[in-house]
Length: 353
Image 1 (spheres, rainbow, N blue to C red):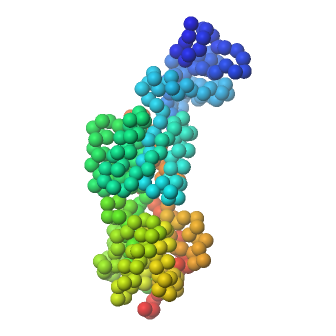
Image 2 (image 1 turned 120 degrees about the vertical axis):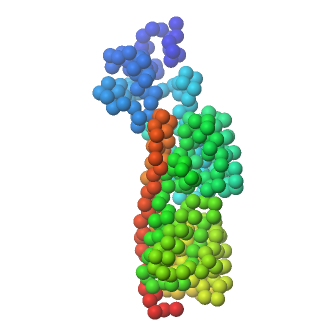
Image 3 (image 1 turned 90 degrees about the horizontal axis):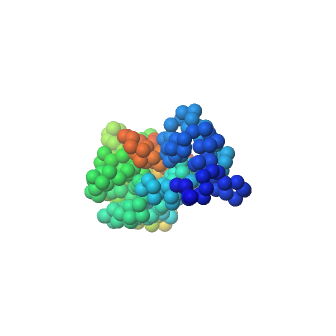
């Protein structure tokens, strides 16, 4: 005779090589096996913290219990897996967020399946559909565009999902307060005396680029400083895009003396373009980046940047998805960046051309 966990016999097997089952845990805990199943079938984050649940989890850990994920998925229709769609997988920013996502999911007994998507329309939808074909239990979407329409399909299908890094409409999301970040960058450059300001803006279809730009322009408007639209150049988030955008700014008759770049990567491209003109960051122009990568403070002229709590973003996103998967209603979360001023923008520009 075989029980529902695939073991022979009616009682616990002896021997160092036997696999611990829920029946073993139930016998040690003095509870019915259905109670053990109910407690262990939920992520630790959402499980009841009753004394009985704590006792069951402690005994399971002491006995070395490892759930049979295949059998569990057949019984429940769930795979204990989450699909993650991100853009720019080689980007350290994206990698940092995903590592936090993966760590949080793993701590709660789930595995993550990561796929990359371009920024082309419908690219995220295609990758999400691919993951749903693998029967994932939920989705974390990090390649959303402001004009995405396929999210409504997920709502109709009652598929748990959370957006991460980028927002779209009123869909549940964990993002940075990018508008605040842009505002802090603009206010800092203004306080240093800059009035000829330029923006290496992000793609117009991403909330990150739009919000950072709007925050920067709001700071300027509050100070009564008009930013010439020709000094706002749409760009990608990488080094080459930042370089091309800076070349466009430098082609103007009076190039900006203060520049805000949407990422530290694009800021590096700006530095290169200005250097080709014999201009040095921190001396001939001021520059502010975004995300404060660890290497930014180690540059020969350290870069002022908005530090982003990226690990918190990833952890929050994973926990929010777990709550949605458990049937809870959730609200979006925005985490604030902080400005770290360094030599690239610290010099006062008052009275200088």
